[in-house]
Length: 370
Image 1 (tube, rainbow, N blue to C red):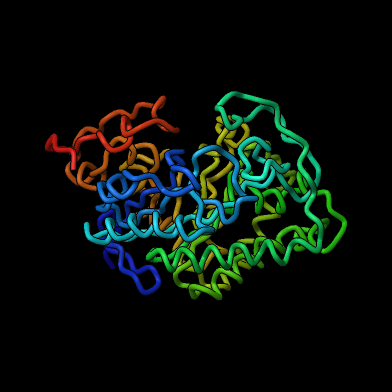
Image 2 (cartoon, rainbow, N blue to C red):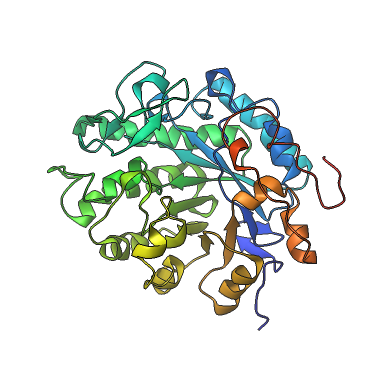
């Protein structure tokens, strides 16, 4: 049997990825009025269509799910049309593209929410630190409103409707965002979920909403076109689970039996705060730790190089690797990896918001900007 590498094709449900260099979901905050994908988003994504798979940036499933200014949504007809222009451009360039479905929960501020309402969460636990308001100025987080038990069925339905909208927009599948301290991870976490009803307390109860969302979205798409992103040792956005191994030792087998297209795990070193390199220096990678309890395609993400990515594939603890920041500045990243070419450095100040500078103006290896 041939050992796979980054350029071995991979069957992903009914799709075949031409390579295993996946573009991770990357928030860019360049949506226009109405949270519609910006006018140059089709070009940005088409430039990166040589990825085995593009996972488009996180998109809020409802106005309630918005956490930052100028992030796109997938809950209106205009947003569907905006994303359809993106998928058509990617498909015309020969690529495949999933959309990440997102609800930020408490990681928001009333000023960025269309109706000015407070952020929502499993419990009224205020995040530490600050967040950008609608004007981009840092402000203290607000105490979120705890979601009522009666609201949760409708919340699950917003994910199902967003999944239907993504299908109408022409995506090849969807990824559910269950990581980085956003709503679904807030329900999983024993520090942010203090509920005493059927969605709080035990690990099974805290995982209930995540699994209901997975079931609702797979009912729309079929399980083989749905991925799920988790960050088992994540510390982003104030998450601090007391026993992450126990939580994910329950969740991941439950996900495994649902036969998703893939499970996308963020490595501890890329948890979002920089602390994980110290706090979990003696831990194995998330993918290594949970490989044996997940029967399916396992995607790993987190500061991989070409060498470490191929090693992960060679050793069998990952099947596909997601690359993030280097895809921003190297639209032809697979070609650069394949040829061993130098990578163009990224310009961090242009990551979030702004115009096409640092967005669509990075050249390919031959110097062209497509």
